[in-house]
Image 1 (cartoon, rainbow, N blue to C red):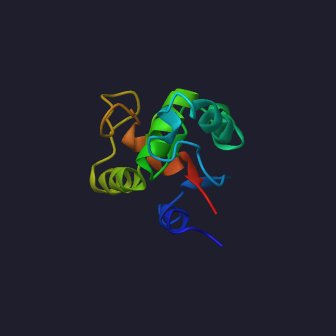
Image 2 (image 1 turned 45 degrees about the vertical axis):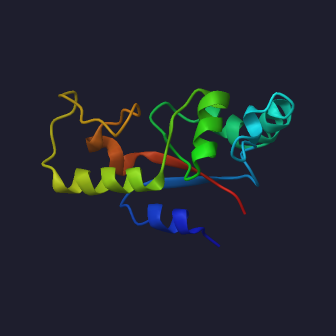
Length: 131
């Protein structure tokens, strides 16, 4: 059975969605930043999520709805993860804008994640969801 995030992402034409089955990223709010809990937090992230993110191609979008999950991915795998709403907004924008030739001024996703909007429909997304 697909999660709500997976069902929504699968609505984007030609988007390949891969889900990392993990029970928890290990961060759990501020748990992962505690001096006495950081090792446990990172060990939990290393069970499935962080290795999958590290193996992902550079042009793969990483999606995680939880704020603390996005921080864990950034800290543990040096990748920026996006909230599903940002990916949906990118898709809507890509469909609404005229297609620019490749290698021209790329449109940027919000914040630091840079993705050429023209490339979104063929992009692979790794969705970090628990059971």
